[in-house]
Length: 138
Length: 138
DNA sequence: TCCTGTCACTTGCATTTTGCAAGTCTCAGG
DNA sequence: CCTGAGACTTGCAAAATGCAAGTGACAGGA
Image (cartoon, rainbow over all chains, first blue to last red; front, side, top):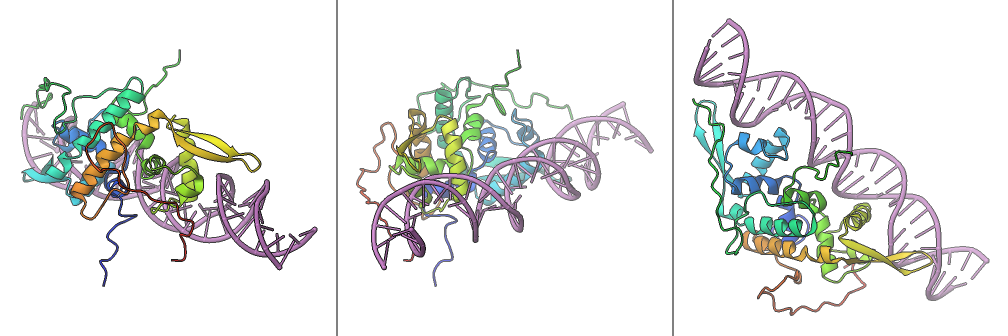
């Protein structure tokens, strides 16, 4: 008997993509991860101020969807470091499309850093941000 | 001088784009419009079956955002025909990025028609679908 | 004329999903 | 012991979403 409902809404790639990352926060988390952020705190401190409960839920969802992986970087209070899988990194192209559209059609917006794409002659990768600006000495 | 808060969440182009089309339905409406659908009924009959109240609201929102325009094609019971503005058509690139990502990473998905982009050597535009009137009771 | 049907929306809720604030846990430092 | 920071959880109140049914204006037929 048939594979039980393979798709949520239809077989359309767009519809299915939106079922995974089609909300207001998921792609922003991916953007931050693409920019090198790795911890919960770094993600929570992005300028958009994602509510912490939503961040926690999105991280679980994205992991469940194979877009990110979490690896413990500390044991006792288990703490995870989040990074993109190839599937997640591939969303860079989508991000880039949004950046281009936004910059072109929403006055005043800008791309805070680059969104990494296959081979695009934009942003000469001249950005080097020191990580952990508040590297607590501990 | 009111502190004209220009941005909802931040100046990031991605965040602002998502504030406009970052929900589960808006981009599907744009997709259909890009595929040539023009009336409320055609949009409502897409395979994803968007709830009619949401469709009505999205159309208003998209028009308010300058992504679509509605022109009456009939007077007495005023009926509108919806079409994309250049700003809306430009979302084709975002759609295309989603299609590519979906096809690559979500097994079984496909692009129902093409999403129109600048210059991309994909999908030789070989689809011609006639609008059928019988949809229910199959 | 009256009845039926279609198209394009609206309205009324019930269910979900956000968002905000505050709380919990664990460990470090003083 | 006390305070504080990091990483999450929990508790709701406030939207947003989804479903079904309703409405208004005709077109077409009996």
